[in-house]
Length: 284
Image 1 (cartoon, rainbow, N blue to C red):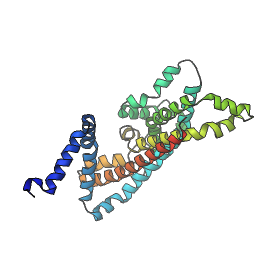
Image 2: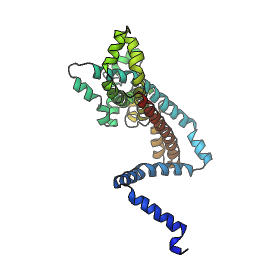
Image 3: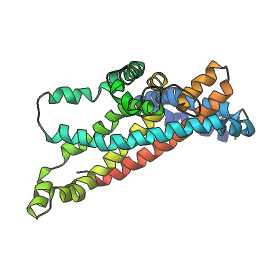
Image 4: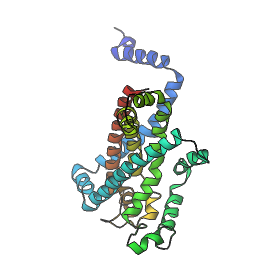
């Protein structure tokens, strides 16, 4: 066997033939995703791992980090659940009813997508402050919104609402009303029709929207940093904690906390894909 026909050369030749058969669009797409998503993700994990398991565990489970995780995930989960209810209600009204300025209301749902988060935070802080339009009405009852954890929840509600509405709305639009009318003709009440006929195929879309909204709320920074006081053990969220570590030139601590959030985000992404796969069983 000659040097040019060694097993390594043969394997390289086969790989080159396989590579040449790949569509160029696939190669460009894979390369773009690799450089934009894979490399930064791998770099973050490698940087966090280079700090050693002892320091990683110490920073990731420090009292201030655990408090930030609790504020971030519990508040985001509560906001996602509330949006799951009201987002579904909004999608139902926009799909099933005709009313004046309907197109304007429908377009307004997408406002959090286009609105800079810092502007949203400034607006919420102004409206819900003690002297604001809404905050001044709540102050006599001892309810303080701006610069508290409640303000964080409202900010998360605002930026995650469109995910539920836009996920549920297409499913509702494709549902045939004939099925509901058949249930009514068989004696089912409106509640029974919704609970047993409409909700089962709608539930995967609702859960997917809730999961997407939850993921978006977990990573929110721009609006929360303005509407909250960012006080440790009170209303400090994990993304703000990362920025504070960077301001203190604690790059290793910021990287470790970022790796924890990224890991949880990847788990959420996996769960969202499972929900979407489950929802295909209910395609109408």
